[in-house]
Image (cartoon, rainbow, N blue to C red; front, side):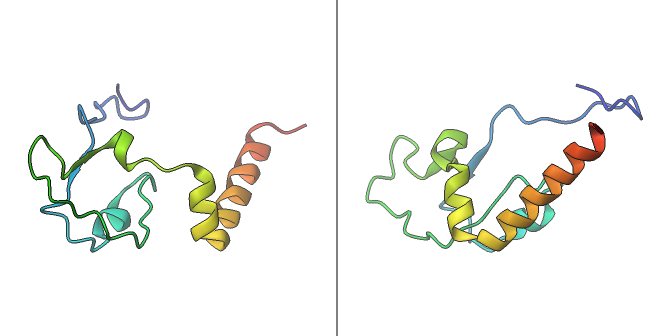
Length: 95
């Protein structure tokens, strides 16, 4: 995949993973994500006794939460983002 304006390739990882043995839940990934694709909650109870077979490595499927969950924990941010999306869609498709 390449950027239409620059013609440069857009880097895309093969997989998205978070290793909870390394992650400190500091939220810096949320701050630096250029696509606003990462949302942090305060669910820090991810511990387990099983350290084998990648039990502490969370991939995209394990990390994913429904949009309704984000709307519930951050209602003001969610409403603001939805309004911005609707305004952008309305500007792109004028009637």
